[in-house]
Length: 186
Image (cartoon, rainbow, N blue to C red; front, side, top):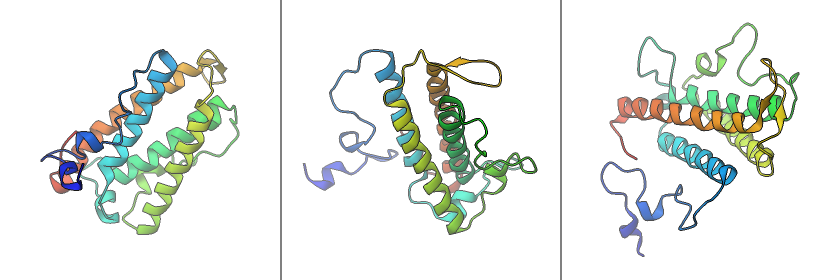
């Protein structure tokens, strides 16, 4: 297939035949593979929504007075990945939190400024935490009990929560991106 045939139709981020979220023709069976594939697809969707924007655009707070921005969401999702995989599933409760301090509990959003170095650091953090979480969840038994401040929770609750978290924030990303450059799509 030539490259022009893979040009996305208007309003789409990727041509359906070249969409990185499509896992091919394989049929996934069972709770664990299906849930992990949904998480993989939502992570890719989120990443696609941020493609091609500069530091100022990523940091733009498109829905005042909210502090929400695409860069803030990126930092927030890095913090979420870090907290659930490292602090909860691996039990490293004393590990310092990412993008959160006692004095600045909303540092993920409040520190999302239009500086290329801040953007680069956010992408590095998110990719590192996603890669780490993928390795943690690769062989994770969903029945495993994990320590949580509210009591033990099953590992499946963690992973399903991450699917929920990404689904919600992909919706936010759609609206924020449309405010920035009008781009909408799959």
